[in-house]
Length: 362
Image (cartoon, rainbow, N blue to C red; front, side, top):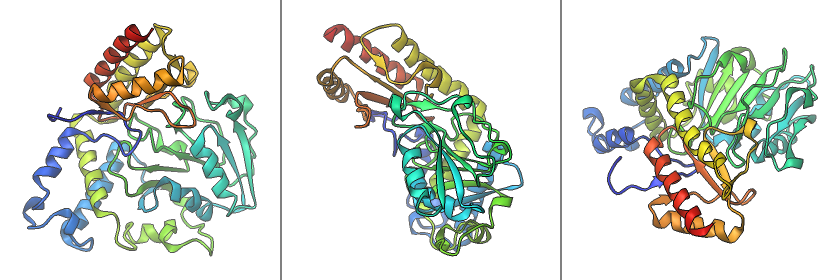
């Protein structure tokens, strides 16, 4: 770990690998002998053309993306995609949304602006989104244009361990807070999108991985900046892209490949999550927020017996060299986001602090 850095449990923008930060630092003023920083570089230059193309190629390699899927880097983050998706993927104007948290709820409301009908095919709102619905709880329309899910719920600490079965209807999934945490079978999705500020890069754009047959459906009112087919033709450079964020995304892809890919990251992430969840399950001072069969490997939510103790926990965690453990206002309590770049030692440090805090306040 780089000296004098806190353990950052932020849900996003979040921790980046030390190796990437050090490499970026070393090339900050003069990128590979170009005489300039990537921040100053024309996106039309040969140097930057290689940066973006290498980033796309390495992302395809890391995720084993099939040839019939396109990779787009689009501005607006995942929130922008809440609008871009219904503006690009509709035939009948009807789509199914499964609401398992705040972002899938917001996505469904945004889609209503552009679709004739948004059907809520399942929801666990009545249980404060503490779990993922089972297949038999879903009411899916076989004639829907697509089925939308948020695969990992950052705020509530839940995740889809088994994808919903949607038949021939394309599955559209927001993977913002779980992308690159483990291997995924891209062919099971019609479209994957993710804001990059969790496991991929600094905030600045969304990655969209879309099957070719879903490219050409942009509605006349779709802004050209979000027209999937047009952006594919322009290699995601219809206008000036977020060059710096894409550059660091490319460096993160190189780091993932250097450590052994997504299989290695899955093993690391499972080990970290097991350490924290095993402790939570072994005691009674803290209460996990998510039901056991729906727990996220990336975002661990928990609380003490009172709001006052929660505030004390957060305050003392900051004094102890940790940050961003305060839970989202919709859930309260605490949230430890243990993304790819969080070292195992960071989770060990957190668990040791939790044990000490429980002993002193129990």
